[in-house]
Image (cartoon, rainbow, N blue to C red; front, side, top):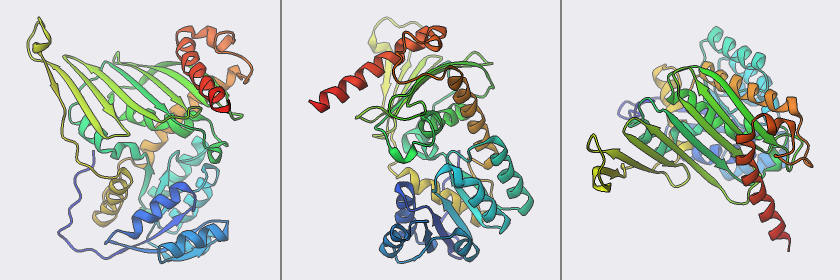
Amino acid sequence: MPKKVETKKKFKKVKFAVIGAGKLGTFHTRTLAKMDGVDLIGVCDPDLARAQKLAWAHNCSPYTKHEDLIPQVDAIIVAAPTQFHHEIGMFALENKVHTLMEKPIAVTMQEAKDMVEMAKKTDTLLQIGHVERFNPAVVEAFKHIKNPQFINIDRLGPYDPRMSQIGVILDLMIHDIDLLLTMIDSDVESFEAIGLSVLSSHEDLANVRFKFKNGAVADVTASRASFERARFMRLYQKNAYISVDFMNARVKMYKKTKPTIKSMKDIDVHYPKVEKQMPITAEILHFIDCINHTKSPWPSGERGTLALELAIQVTEYLERYNLPKSVSAESSKGARAVSDFGKVVKIVFDETIGKIKGGRK
């Protein structure tokens, strides 16, 4: 976990640029514009009108080519579509510009390795935007997590057409894959997965069970075919249960107070205090702190490649079955191979379709 950022020592303002003026780029630009230790130079997007609107709203200059903007700054945040990460990242790192790359780091492992190697070669920072690590509820929960034995994570939300070029594994579940690899001190031994294409040509809903070499097990469900957002994590470890509400930044703990439980009085229910801070703000402050103090970012490019590698493996596993929209989770060969997960997915799938049909009446 990153240490709290020290603000006593004065540092020269870091010249920043944001590459990508979409939803995430807007969040990053808005956040950077409010920071004292930042000099926001510009925003870049191929759509000039969009770049102008965002840049002028935050007193900086618009650009349509990243090659024109990157040489003017010390650091960039890349919030462009994933297929452009490698091109932009390599150019920035070659020019020794510190880079915060939104997740996933790249489309392929080779692209990710290229950037990691370039960062090392030029002694430039490469941080991956797994912002959920900086969620205040996750930060607090990490203090109490010790050798979890079973983890359940649900991440559900509405469909975003802007992410149609990748599936829900690389779009949403990669956050939770990164958290699992951070919380569990063990390699993944095996996994089983089921996925459905509902609204795009890629999987829009997936359930994966990861088994780790130390015996830990994690069930992870991700969906972008739901009208309602839900972000929950539940962890079970020796003598304790921890519940994390990502969206409302809340943590709840149940802990045994006696060796043998005779009544609910023998269980301590605790709500740890969660320090309120926007995750994206904490993430950028950490990046700036690493720049000012020449520290390795959390997560680094190397850590980002681990999450990407596992996410790609799961995606390829799902693609082997090539599940079409018209085939139900129960009848598909892939679902029969992992029937337990198919039942879980079908419940979520049926609820989602029910809401869609209900909304059209």
